[in-house]
Length: 553
Image (cartoon, rainbow, N blue to C red; front, top):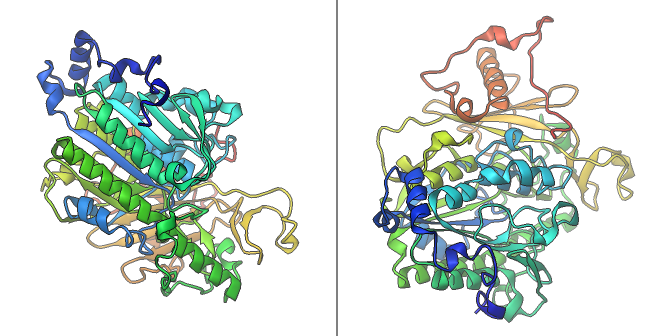
């Protein structure tokens, strides 16, 4: 068994506290009190367990859940599916940081996938890791906490503690070094490196994560509740499917929606630079990528089935909440952009979210606007922790899961992204010039320095709207009415009611400077919204916008 090999990763470790007998009784009472306001060991047996399953780059808009038939049956049909779940940044590391901290990127300061962008940096470890929701679950609520898979893209970097660093809050740590792979990778097992090769039966990462998760369920302590976070590589590149699935979906192609392989008219210059129509080689490449993504998800579907069967066999299923989601969406051929994320459109910012657990009626769908900053508050709420003691920007959607009818909920969320580019021209695309990145062989670039934007994504009974501003010389604006234009083809910034445009600009400024409770104030379409147009104007009488910091740290 993986956990017990070579004496087991808990043996001889300070993290043996939970696995080897649990918390001291008096400390357990104090911890329970801090989470529940009650005392007594009997309360421990009633507290729910939580499992968070996180995929990598799995879209919702382009059919990303289609291959996951067992997951949809075992989680979605047995609980609640959210049809309006979003991420505040369509990029791995900032989005994962938002999940862990419950904060928008402008508050956790992770802006991209590099150490310089605060991804798993020393600054992140010192300032943000101690207040993540798993750290609170462990230190304040007495939960056993288990992590397996991809953490943050620069985790394990020599300049940030290497694989010896085990973030605060985890009693068992089984983390991938850096970015997603399927073979030939290194794991940190409670701070000790273990290399894996390319033998499918023992090295395929999705299956390794499944096996070690099952071992944890079999050999954990039974005296405390547990939290598991399982973070799979799929469906991230290099899209290496398990051998038995490599011929699946041979007749599947990337969806040819209305926004497939068309010019991005009236959009930011980065979108407009994509060549239309795409070359045949680009289309073949993105179709192969789309097919490979679905193939890798079949192993995730197997993982979910194995996990739920083991929870059921061990008598834990009825007392366990299971969340399934992704760190960001993805696009294949939209507005003639070949493959990537990073953009402000639905296909990149909208993700799957399925939840089952105690008190959740089966086969429910919620249209409530939720974001991944809400996952931490919701899980802490499940554990009984007082959310007023946190600095999180998100909200607990536990009342929604339990079917409460009088829930006061938000009508908007913030989406923000800081673009990346290179100071020198790409040698394969000299005509494009400096300041771009993520360029393909046919010189279509997916990112740039001034692909830096912030959006208000708002949903109400009257409006399904997205308002975005770019931090560039022209302060370019994009606005979409998704009721009339779900594919976001027509930018209505120049035709929408100027008063509404002003209110959205004002609301954007408020959200970009929010922190904690102020991130949960009423949106433009909430009854409690208050609009003071005087705050929008500088001494020169022009609309004032809050610019992004090029150096957020």
